[in-house]
Amino acid sequence: MSLSEKSEISIPPPAKCSSHSSNPSNVTLVDVEKEIARILAEKNGSPKDIDLEAQAGARKKRHACISFIRYTALDIYRRLFSLVFLANLAVFIAVMTAERKLLALVNATAANVLACGLARQPLVVNAIFVIVCSIPRSAPLRLRRIAAKVYHYGGVHSGCGIASFLWYAGFVGLMSKEYWSAAGEAGKTAFSILPVVLSYIILALLLAIILVAHPAFRMKKHDYFELTHRFSAWVVVILFVILLLVFSGEASRAAGQPLGTFLVHLPAFWFLVLTVLSIIHPWLLLRKVPVSGETLSPHAVRLHMNHTNTTFGKGIQLATHPLQDWHGFATFPDPDGQSFSCLVSKAGDWTTARIKCPPKHIWKRGVLIYGFAYAMRVFKRVIVVTTGSGIGPCLSFLGDENRPALRVVWQTRSPRRTYGRDVFDLVTKLDADPVIIETNQSGRVDMLPIIRKLYSEFEAEAVCVISNPRVTKRVVFDLESGGIPAFGPIFDS
Image 1 (tube, rainbow, N blue to C red):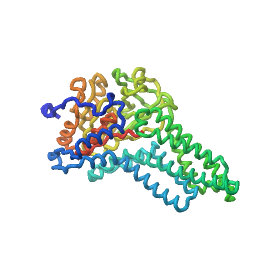
Image 2: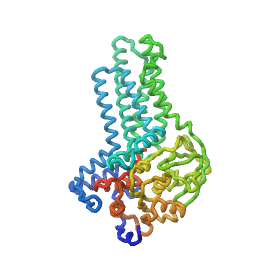
Image 3: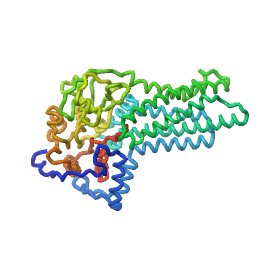
Image 4: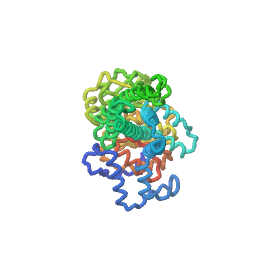
């Protein structure tokens, strides 16, 4: 964009935080959705009229309520969740009203636990991204926009997680009924008290996993969520294996079969074997790797690593202790081609400590995993919108020579001083003339008018938004409500 063209874009006055919280970092996704609903209610359902005639002709007005339902209440993540859960619910009702067999409930529980785990397994996630995003850019744009929603796969994870609790609760209820009714009638039960006790312990742990995964708790107490979610899940799988062996042992004796034969013909056994393997695999690749820290400013550090290579759209999980909290960062290749980097910006105790004292070694687990940015490769022309250290994931585009044509809108404080000249130069490799809004000079501004103008002038096929949860969700919602296809991370883990 030439200087004369740049002058046509007027910088609006500083935007005000729409949340009632005085600290935007404390605003959760639940708060954002409530805020969107409140704003739409104040408008009495009037449609949002955005003139996009210059790029695609006049667009039909969208009713505000429909926009909220389509892009927030029923986004792709929630649609996947609903599809998975409702399908399970229908089968669950059929089983409970017809067969009501304990083994059917066990098999269904194990199947959902497996699907839940595979939806977070790095190799499976990478395969999903590669397969879905292999769609050629010559394909219809509508089809490519659907494929770009692949990063919502977490809806399958949460849907199967809730469904596994449903099936397991049914199993516990039916087993308890059989145990106590048999004990009361004949004084002799079909199985011992041990599987009953184990089943209730597992049920309590499953409930704890689900409760801490609620967005309100997860965003405010992420460290507690991660530790509870991880270790409780491990304990659940271990106890489930023990329960299956105990239950199968008693069932096989009652049926007059050897335990081995009984297990081989039990689908739940094989589902659990695959579940255990999927959990163990990333930890088999646990390594303490050397890292070189480059302090960019009191607010950011750049970590250089060379234990492997990275490609477009991949991220890495890092920790200072393997059994404590892990943190994910987007990676981008260094100019030498032999190493890669990630940007760590001050956003909490862990990142602050890494900035003050850059580590010499750090733990990594599993393989590099494809993330949200990789989905953008299906487009020909993309507007990249980011704030602050969100520029880090955007730099991953450098790992693909066949990347889309890009325009960059970056709102940040003193970019050269905060992130260094090298990072600034990398940004210009993405876009030779990026639109950079320095908040130390202009304050925080509403980027929507700038994005809409660039979207029209650049004839972009999509807008990629990478910022904090609050800004990302609001900008994506406003753009999609106005008919502009926008994509942003959903912060579901």
